[in-house]
Every structure is written in C-alpha cells, then in structure tokens.
Length: 576
Image 1 (cartoon, rainbow, N blue to C red):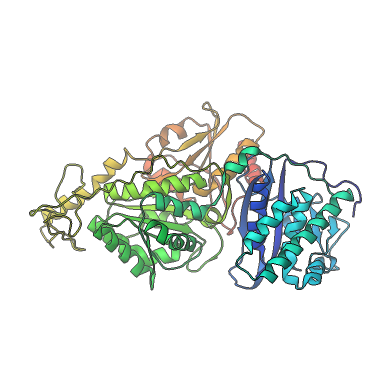
Image 2 (cartoon, rainbow, N blue to C red):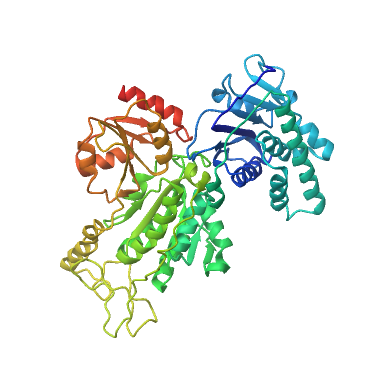
C-alpha cells in the first residue's frame, strides 16, 4: 500500500459497492445518494444485479460530482467489496488508480495487493463490535461520508429517518454504526492516505432525486391515470408498486391481475368505462398481452402500455437490460391498426412523455407505448423539479344522444367516443368487424371502409410527433443516432471526443418516425447508430421508412448498459 497521497482532487468520483444479494447494497445506495445530494453534490446511481433473492453478486455505482452526471462509466475510483466474490465480479473495471477499501479477510490471500491501492478498513469487525455484522453496510456509509467530509449530523439524521420504522434498538445501533464508520473515514483522511475535494453546488438542494420508474409513475399521475392493472414482472413492477402506494392520494385503482391477459383486458374495460388506464410489463408479459392489444386496435380503445425491456427470448436475463423489444411493440398484434411508440432518454422525458401518452391515447383512440429498459428504470440522478404548470387533463369523451354510433365514419378517422351511462346512447363495441353502430358485420365493402378509417389516424399523428433532439453543432460532419435510454451515455461520450464535428440525434419517439429524420441523416458524411440489441432494430425501422441504410453500428447485448468509455472507444474507431 502506498502511504502517500492517493487522491489529490477529482471533480467526478465513481464509487462502487459490491456484495451478495441480501447484504443491503440497495440500502447503501439509497442512503449515500441522498446524503450526497443533501451535501450539495450532483449524483448518479445505477445498479446491476442477479436474479436471486439471496447470494450471487450485485453492484451499484454512485457517481459524485461538482457538475451534473447522468451516465454509467466503467471507471471505479473507490471500490468497497462486501464479500469474497465482489472483487472478481468487477475486476475488469479495476485499475491501478482504484482505491479498494476492504478487510483483508474479504479480499482473500490470493489478491495481488502490489498491483492495487488497497486500504484495510474493518467494516465487519466494527459492525460485530456493535452487535451484528449486518451493520457493516451502514459502517461503509459512514466511512464514505467521512471521506467526503460531509457533516456527521446530516448523515445521522438521514440514517435515523431511513430506519425510523425499526425498533429503537435497531435505530440506535445503526446510528452507532454510521458514526463509527464516519470516524474510520476521518482517520483515512487524517493519515494522508486519501484526500477528496469536490466542490458542492448550492442549486442541488432545490432539485429532486428521481428514479426512472418513479418518473414514469409520476407522469402517469400527471396524465390522469386512475386505473392500473398489471402482473408483476421485473423490471416494470415498480410502476405498479408506486401507483398502488399513491392510490388513496390520487384516486387510483391498482389491480394486481392473475396474469397479463387479464391485466390488459381490465385496462381496456376501464377505458370503456371512462377511466384512464395503463399496464406495466416486460417483454415476456407483453407477449401474453398481444391478443388484447389487437382487441384495443379493433375496439379503437385508448390504452397506455409501459414496456420495460429486458433480455430475451423467453425468461432470458430477467434482471438485466436490453433494447430488443422495439420490433415486438411495433409489430405485436394481428391485423393492421395504428399505434404510437415513445422512448424516453432522460428521467424528465419519462415524466413528460408518459403524461403525453395518456392524452395521445385518449385523443386518437390508439395504443401508446412507453419503451424503457432495466437500466433506465433502475437508474437515477438529481434534476430540477418537473414543470407542473401544464397538467390540465382533457378527456375526449362525448355525451351520447339516442342515435349515437360508436364507430361513425369520419373524415379524419376519429369517431366520437362515448361511455356507458353518459347520455342516452347505447355504446356498442365488438371484437369482430362492425358497422358504425358497433354491431357485427360481414359487409366486405364496409370492412374496407372501417380499416381505412382506423388507418387514417396515422395521417393525423404526424402533427403530434415528438421531434428528435439534435445535440451538438448544426454543421456536423458525423452523426451519432440513438434512441431511448442511451441518451446521457451517448451525450457524455460525444462531449469527450477529441473533435468538434460530431453531433448526436436522439429519438424520443420511434414510431411513427419523425418526418425530419431523412434531412438529419442526409446532412452527415458518416452516421453511426448506437443500440442495445443484436440486430440494430431501430436502424432497420429507419431503412424501412426512409430507404437510408445506416451501416456503421455500435451494438451491445450482454445484459449490461453501455458505458461512456466503451462508447468513446467505439466512436473513435468509426470516426477516426
């Protein structure tokens, strides 16, 4: 171990904690991110975890910075391994500059201490002296807080608040644990082995710390969602849990259905009755919903579907991330009917786009998808409060008269939507092809009219498209195309390229494809697309609708998100 100064100053530090499921890694992440924010630091957190209740090895990354940070990096500046398998789990990311804070017993005798900066910190021994090794994670919280020089009272107050539902004895022992850890951190500072100096930002205090899954759920509330029916499936379940927790406050009915088939049919029924409903699911669950999706297409029923992607096929990697369900959402369901696919790239997008999804579904009587993924829903950072000034909810429901026709043929394809009990009319819907009144028909000429009527909505949707966002110089020579959750990773990678002729184009709506797509692509000499799947599904969609083939591709499908460093390397290879 080098007894000299290990850190002089860094404006952006990556802290990684790693251990078994059940060791409280998520609790440490929760506590530290909030403590850092209270201290005025910008924070970003993302996790990767195995599909096990106990055992395995999970890790969480917390970036702490004097400026906004919102992307995952490979770099580890400080590593806290809490079990024997932790170092091996992240060893590809460890460099000679990484400081490893751990106990020798945890590291093991086969660990090459000469190659790394290792500091023996007695997390478990300290916890056992307090009463149980279970407190070792809170000792680690205190140690990190001490290293950053955060006020102990701030740390203790937040720890007490976090454990307030526990017994007084547990609360007191956790307070002792965080204090002992804090003193360990101060000891490392005083010894001159570590020095961390990151300036805080006064603006952070007024900001919110919000996770992707929370942003989707909050957007649903802002969009007037008053019914959610879903069957739990990672990584989408957090939306159901959040809305269930807010059910009394916002008048929401939250129903955990017996399966996904029931869930989507319940949501369609809720829209029929006048509610604003959504389902939240992942690929395998949505596969069971596809017949219900077709039902919504035929009934011209609005519905909002949150599809949180994870690797398939089948069960795949249930707790990992991927962007491989774009084509599933695009082509799911039999027959032809319009739909809208939105793909937020920032937590702010998740809020505003989900809110917008309910209005689009209601206004045009079509299914609207919110495409996220495990990386997106499980990561979070501090951001300014969402703008709530435009939260007016306008329901597009008419009061029916006696001769009301649910599927009246109209020039724009949108029939007046009535609901049972609101007016004198009978609201007839049917899964078979139907006439204007909603009754089954086999009139083949009328069949053509009804199909054309439904598809005419696509022409109207062109006026509602969320435009892509161009970041970088307008006179770019090189263009990086991406969609969904890769936004911040691509943004930071492009910002760190040693060139000023690269811009990136991010799509928050992937279908219908924005009209300006062709113009953006034709202006570039070189175009590279970044996607988290194996077959570049969005590039295929672009080629289908524009005729432009993006040949240069950076793809990842090992179950982990891109990191800034690997994108910089990949982009440099293509753009050099």
